[in-house]
Amino acid sequence: MANEQALTSRAEDFNEWYNSLVLRAEMADYGPVRGTMIVRPYGWALWENVQQALDRRFKETGHENAGFPMLIPMSFFEKEASHVEGFAPELAVVTHGGGETLAEPLAIRPTSETIIGHTYARWIQSYRDLPILINLWNSVIRWEMRTKLFLRTLEFYWQEGHTAHATSDEAIEETRRMLDVYADFAINDAAIPVIRGEKSEKERFAGAQMTLTIEAMMGDGKALQSGTSHYMGQNFARAFDIKFLDPNNEQQHCFTTSWGLSTRFVGAMIMTHGDDKGLVLPPKLAPIQVVIVPIYKGDAERPAVVEAAAAIKQELAAHNLRVKLDDRDNLTPGFKFNEWELKGVPVRIEIGPRDLQNGTVMVGRRDIPGREGKQIMPRAGLAQRIAELLAEIQANLLEKATRFRDEHTTDVTSYDQLKDAIDTGFARGWWAGDRVDEERIQTETKATVRCIPLEQPGDSGTCFYTGKPATKVAIFGRSY
RNA sequence: CGGGGAGUAGCGCAGUCUGGCAGCGCACAGCGUUUGGGACGCUGGGGUCGUAGGUUCAAAUCCUAUCUCCCCGACCA
Image 1: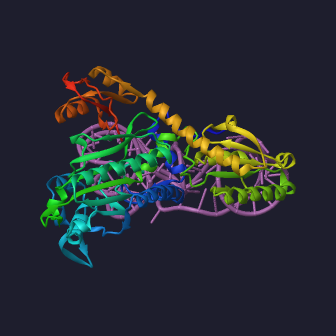
Image 2: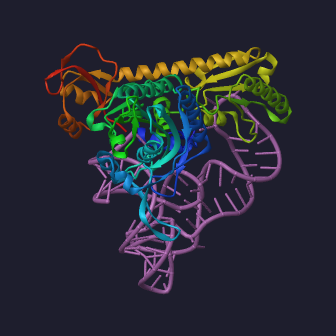
C-alpha cells in the first residue's frame, strides 16, 4: 500500500486528517471566495438525510416551514441592543442593486430574528393567533475570521425555527422541547452522545435570555456546539413591537424562541465517528448504507457475478435500504474496499464466484475496519440480516462514542486538575464563578464553559475555581 | 485582522537560492494481461507555473501588489 494514498492519522495531526478527509471523501470543496464552501453531492446527500430526520420531528411537534428573504434592512439590526452588538461585526452588506447605490444598505441575513420579529408584529393581533411555530431551511452569512469546512464557513446551510408564544412558560417549554428534538436526533440518528445543557451568560446568543445547547465531544477531545435553542424572553418582542391582546383585552408582548442546527453537524459526524481509514457514517443517515462490490476473474466470470450482485441490490432496495452496486470494471476490488471505507459506507457486501457456488456473500462492517470486520453470510434472508447488522453498527457507534466521551471526561476539584483535564477532553466540576472568572480561565487555558448540564447531581459542592459554595456542575473544554 | 507557511498538469511534489527547452510519481485515455484488501506492461493526452503589473535579450525563478489555502492568535453555529 502506498503511503501517498493513506490519510494522515488522527493521532499525528487531527486537523490535517479532517481537512484532507473532507476533500478526499468528496464531502465538500473550497469556493473561490475565502471561507466559502461547496458542498459536493455526497456531502449534500448526508445533509439531506439530516434535514429529513429533523424536518420529520419539526412537523411532529407542530411546526410549519416557510421562506423568508435573505436581504434585511440594516436598520432592523439596530433595534435590539445586544443583538446588533453580537452580529454587527460579522454582517455582509449589500450596498448596490440594479447598478445604483441603495438608499438603505441591506444586510445579508446572519440569522433571521429581526425580519421574523418585524413580520410577526404584523401577523399577531390576538392571543388566538398564538403560538406561531415556523421553521426556515435556508443559508446565512456571517463574516467569520477563521474558517473551516463545515465547522465555520462564511455561508452555511441550516434550519432556524422561530416561534412566538403568549406566556413565558410556554416559550421556555418550546425552547426545551426543541433542544430535546435535537438531542434525540443527535443520539438516535447520528449516534452522537450529546450533552444537553445551558450556556453561560458569556456564551449566550446575542439577544437571548437563555441559550440551551447540545454539546458533543469530537475525536480529539474538543467540544463542538452542535445545535442550539434560545429563549428570547420579550427582548425581540419589545424591539419589534410583537404584541397581542390577551383574553382580558390587554396588550402584552409575546415571548419568542429560536433554534438552529447547521451543516456544522456534518462536521460533528465526521469528527465523532471517523477513523484513520476515513469517514464512518451512522447507518441511519449514511447516503449509501450498503455497497456491493462484485469480484470476478476475467470476462468469463463477470456476467454471472454482476447479475447476482444486481439481484442482491434489488432485494436490499426492496427492504428500503440505500444500496449502491459498484460495477466499475477498471478498478480492483481492493481499491474499491479502501474507497468505500474512506467514504464511510457502513456495510460492504463482496460477492464472487466462490459465493455463487456456496450461496453466500462476504459482508464487511465499517465500524470494524479491515478483514476483522468481515463475515460470511448466507444469501437466503440477506436483507433481514443486513438490516440487523446496520442496527447493530448504529448502536455500536453510539456506544463507542459514549465510551470515548466518558473516558475523556474528568471530574475536577481544583483549577490545576482542570488544566490537565482539558488537554485530553472535558473537565466537569462544581462551578460558582462569574463571567470574569470564566474569561480568566479562557485566557489562561483556552477552555470555556461548554454548558451547565440540564442533568445535575442534585446536591451541592465547592467551586473548583472560586472555592465558593456551588449548586451547579459545569462542563469545561476547548472547543471548535 | 496580526504573525508564520504554502500556491508549478486532476492529486502529491521537484525545479526558485545562482534567470536560459516546464519535469517526476500517481491519476486520466487507448490496447493487452489482470481482479477475494489500494494490479501490471506498452503507447499517449494534459500547463497562460494562483492572478495582475514591473525589471531583463530572456522570468516558474528577481521586485511590487493582490487572491486563495493551512497553522498560531483576537471573534463565532
